Image 1 (cartoon, rainbow, N blue to C red):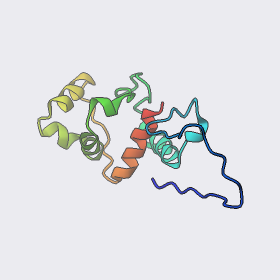
Image 2 (image 1 turned 180 degrees about the horizontal axis):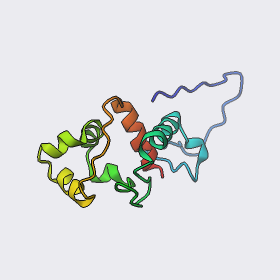
Image 3 (image 1 turned 90 degrees about the horizontal axis):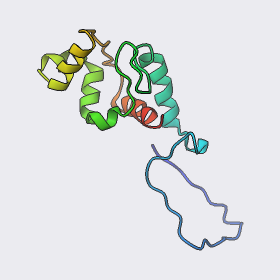
Length: 129
C-alpha cells in the first residue's frame, strides 16, 4: 500500500513539543480513520469467499475461526493453503493433516485465482478484528 501526504505550504507550521511517529497496527475499532483500502478489500474478499465456512473470530463454523491465523501459520503457508489445500495435505504437512482430521476430512475449497496481495488483505482484515 502506498500512502501519499500533501502539505499546504501557504499555512504556517506549528511545531510539536515531541516528534510524533507511529509504526504498527492500529485498531480500526478505536480509530476508524485507520480503516484503509487494504482492510476494506480484505473484508470484501473475506465476506464474499470465506465467511460461509469461517468466522473472523475464534468461532468454528464449518472450518476453524480465523482469528490469529497469522500468528499460527507463516504467510507463505497460508498462501499455499488458500491456493490448494489438498496439495498441502498430500504433501504430508502435519498441521494441515491435523486440521483435516479435526474437521472430519472436510475439504476446503481451493482459491487458486486469489493473488498473494488479496490474501494479505484478508489477513490484514482478520488481524484487525
